[in-house]
Amino acid sequence: MTLEELFAIPPYSLNQQQKNEILKEILSRLTHFHYKNCIEYKKILDALNYDITHSIDVSELPFIPVRLFKTYTLKSVPQEKIVKTLTSSGTSGQAVSKILLDAENVHNQTKTLNEIISSFIGKQRLPLLLLDTEMIKKDRSMYSARGAGIIGFSIFGKDITYALDADMQINISKIEEFLEKHQNETILMFGYTYMIWQFVIQELKKRGKKFNLKNGILFHIGGWKKLKDQAVDTATYNRNVQECLGNVKVYNYYGMAEQLGSVFVECEHGHMHCSNYSDVIIRCPYDFSEAPIGQKGLIELLSVLPSSYPGHIILTEDEGEILGIDDCPCGRKGKYFKIHGRIKNAEIRGCSDTYERR
Image (cartoon, rainbow, N blue to C red):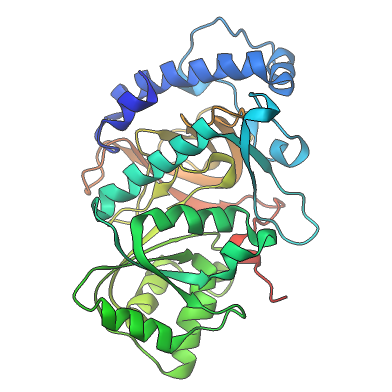
């Protein structure tokens, strides 16, 4: 199956058995391609004595650790075909991942994100309030995973308005003007988890200010470490968002620069979902065997998108567990899972978690 054929299928309609067959075909094809075209990836598989000609299940396909992208610049296409270099976020002094993308990879990332998010909000563009600063577009030093996320999400919006000024101060009058203009429409919002909490929700509480959205949708992404340190869980976060902003559906989602586009959105029942374009395997940390449903382990991410670099199967430094397969009450097929956070001693990722005033 080609990606275009896969895109023609609703993103959460395949059951796990159907999906496994498609993933096996596409991921095996990608493994062969990267083996032939990326020297470093070939050396890794050779060192593992991996038989590239052997047909195996998806769970047995070789993975590489996500941290490898902080050490090596991996690519499987000629340099002249690279149109964009994406860097992961990181705290000061940390190494960052460099992801090299060609035009095909960029197109497929955009297409995938569009199919996934549209399945939640519909195909129409909505008035978009970005809970960030417009400087994200102008300051190239800020153009990393955070900048790419903001720009990528903008495809779903019209009359795009930024809620924060260059100094990360909330612009109340600007927001009020935007909401007044679109008072009879569904308002779409996007931002990074901790930044929304710090610069929007906490600031509104401090000022005793509330908005009264009649129909809002908020997507947010980013680490939860600082919020968990403050004893803020998902229920507390959502409740505060609704207290400050009004009638808002809140969707958290999970993803990373190393597999941009393959996002895992939390459904109405609080479960992270794998779409047709990606999957999750939980690995036991002691022997990397596949963990059963309900057992915690390291999260392995699989994506059909990475064609310009060997990032189609990566082992993250996040811990999670599979909650179920094909039977979530929301009706979406495939695996659904829970994230427990970063493993001990792993580097803290950047984005909203590590924003510092400069």
